[in-house]
Length: 229
Image (spheres, helix red, strand yellow):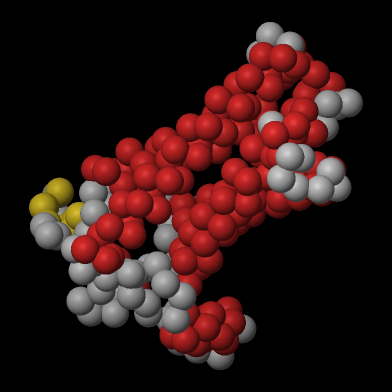
């Protein structure tokens, strides 16, 4: 249940639970580990990649760390899916991350706003269409990375059940999708969530768990800004 507290003259409300904060911090740590160890192998001819691999103890150590981070990411993804499935099916929680028709309408409205044809950005429920997009990008892209990663990790076992062509195909998908996710998260998600004019100054709610009540009321539809447990 949401609750508020006063900090000076600014009132805050609870936006994320402690569980969500820890989950997000774990995701950040694993994302960085996978990006550093994976992209340095993809672009191994670059000087900076060679320096990273050398600092990690060589290519074998870099691969071991990448595999370990991948295994932990798989565990994180599985628990996330299980917790949310259980919450929606058995605890009757709102499936607030499902994409709806209103999300498409909000996107079109914001195009008009950016062009100066609307007075204010679209209001949204607990999450905006941009937050939903990045969520499904990470979740579905992450599942794809898990599948292709395990194919590359255990190619002999994979070819017992799949044609051999799946190995080079998995490599192409795994490395290129990794680059795409890295660019979208690093360039778009971080900027849009923390530094864009709509949220500036720095939005720290995913780290603190709190957001300004006034700002939340301005951005969301009334009654749709509860705590994400």
